Image 1: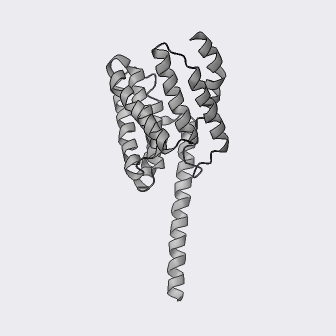
Image 2: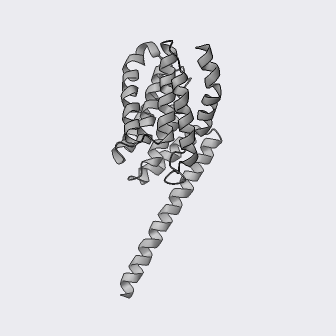
Image 3: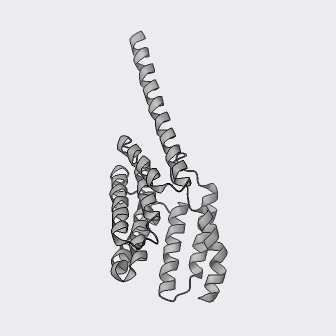
Length: 212
């Protein structure tokens, strides 16, 4: 009986220590990101992902960082490297957690980065993929604020491109903001972004709708 208790305590201690290391590593990675040290943050998330092989979250952030820094990048070689890494790690995250709406949204962001770089070359291919991704994400998680907002922002972009009214999608952004208020991420490190940007988009919605 004593041996069983000892083994249980040792296992508990090991699990607690691993959790502490994970938390410290993730906090440090976010600190680096907050200091605009994106390469260092990405590398640290990548190291954490290599250890946390059943946890999709650190791989997700490797993908997200490399996607965000790709918007506005004009060097195709650099862009290809960054979005290639983003795709590699979002595929890892997806293998761990299939049909995860947060991962689906990140997949769409990677596609959007390619469209932003060269719409003439990549627009048709990736636009069709994004329409399917956002529809699937909304079907899986209709009350996830990032899903609702991201789809609305994508729909707005498409409406502007075709010269259509964006005002119907302003209502979707408003709904997303309502959902953000009550949204509780699964942990301190799970995705919880989007509310500030949604508010900014909504604040400009009326003016943009009038212009259109």
